[in-house]
Every structure is written in C-alpha cells, then in structure tokens.
Length: 101
View 1 (spheres, rainbow, N blue to C red):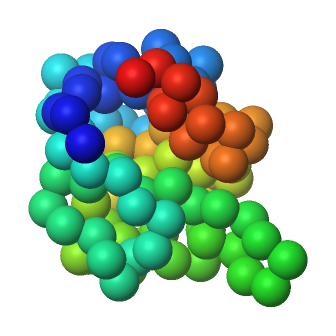
View 2: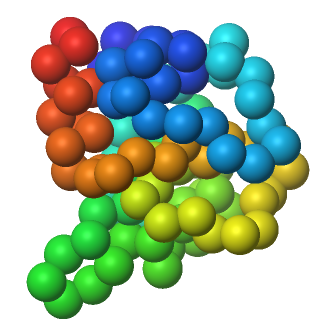
C-alpha cells in the first residue's frame, strides 16, 4: 500500500476522529482486518461479520503495532498515541479507501 496520512483516511471515509489523539499527519503504511497480521504503522479495520465482531480485537491490533483503528462502535476508552476513526460501516470505509486510490 502507498503510504497515506490520517487526514486522507478521514477525508475519503467521511469518518470522525474520536478520543484524544487527533494528529492528522500520522502516516499509515498498511491496512488489515486481521489483528494477527498487523504490522507497525498499519490501520486496523474492525469488521462486523456473521460469526465475529472485529471490535473485540481492536486492543490486540493496537498491541501488535497498529497506529489506529477504523471502528463503527465507540470503545469508550482510548489508548494514548493511537487514533480511533468512527465510521458508520467499516466494510464501506475500506471500500471508500480503495476507491481513493
């Protein structure tokens, strides 16, 4: 993936940054919806599926090095130095990101 900024991610998804971290110059180097495959600098997309809810894995993704997450549910607690981008639909948001390219 070509590196983008958090500002670009916010713009293309129409999401809203929540929590204390608001540095829109943050560099994003990859995308994943699998917390086991996160690399440093990736953003984690929390998909809601028929069998599981990716929101359950947000903390694990952040522990693994994700710089932030795209979520459809406000977690209520925020990790320092990590961004939380609230969208209506995380699957639509990743499609919006793909269309941005």
